Length: 317
Ligand SMILES: Cc1cc2nc3c(=O)[nH]c(=O)nc-3n(C[C@H](O)[C@H](O)[C@H](O)COP(=O)(O)OP(=O)(O)OC[C@H]3O[C@@H](n4cnc5c(N)ncnc54)[C@H](O)[C@@H]3O)c2cc1C
Image 1 (spheres, rainbow, N blue to C red):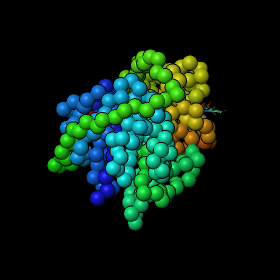
Image 2 (cartoon, helix red, strand yellow; image 1 turned 30 degrees about the vertical axis):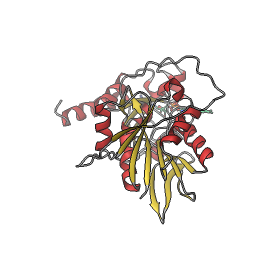
Image 3 (cartoon, rainbow, N blue to C red; image 1 turned 180 degrees about the horizontal axis):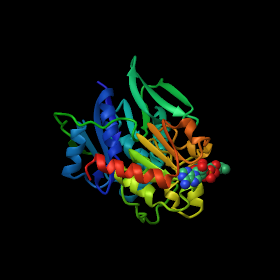
Image 4 (tube, rainbow, N blue to C red; image 1 turned 90 degrees about the vertical axis):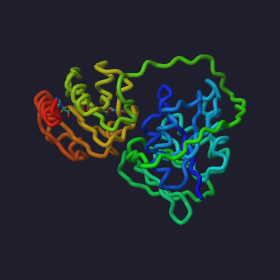
């Protein structure tokens, strides 16, 4: 029996959607157990985890120190000591955690994977690399595999019959770390879905000329997050957390809508692996059209209001 440990991502005590995707994938690999680092999970969180396949929810609280990669890796290692496969959401922090744990335990590690399966007793992952210009399949030739899964690469699906999600407390002693945590202050989060996890991203570039009202409205109608090109953030039109690309956030939504963005290689590097790419640009030769599944040549100030109106009408709003 393959035991698959899944590190839970939390938002204010609730289970974040990428974890439900990861649990769904974990079910196809073996028996999922969830690892919850932080204050004790509530009944709703346990129910959510069970509905998506967690047979156990192993809980450890390392306090604020649990934010440090070395402590987090040790906590995950302690809770997942019997796991053949460890799955985490591929965030900046978790990539470091996965690597530290692999170093510590001799496991094989792949981050930014788009999928994983067991072939002849070994985990094989799929991944897009080099700004989504290559698809790579990797076989992890080690007894234990640690995989970082990108959000939006698996469709989360609840079970008809929920798994037990039995809570279990794990005794854990935090290791010494070279870092000392002095203070923790949460950064106020933008409203809505975090950019890296959003299933839909609507981005605006220099072509918006600084007016993001239509981009925001379209994102709103589609239930997505707002992204931007670096030129737009550098102009101060929108804050840097919205930047998509090589130096910004990498996104892999099911739908990416690029409005007034030329499609420079630095931007493409952060969004090219999206499911469906739609581009709106006045220049028919804009490079973004080379990777777009659907291209609209036109002024975004004409095109977006029509798209918004059509979507609202289709939804009966
Ligand atoms: C080291 C390095 C790292 C970088 N990292 C990033 C990164 O992470 N992310 C990133 O985005 N960029 C990054 N850049 C910058 C990148 O190279 C481009 O300069 C930037 O992406 C261009 O932004 P843009 O497409 O908004 O602007 P532009 O290239 O100026 O394109 C604007 C587009 O809008 C169209 N347009 C104009 N008006 C309208 C309208 N009314 N309706 C519709 N279309 C219109 C134009 O036809 C044009 O195609 C990086 C650059 C360097 C050197």
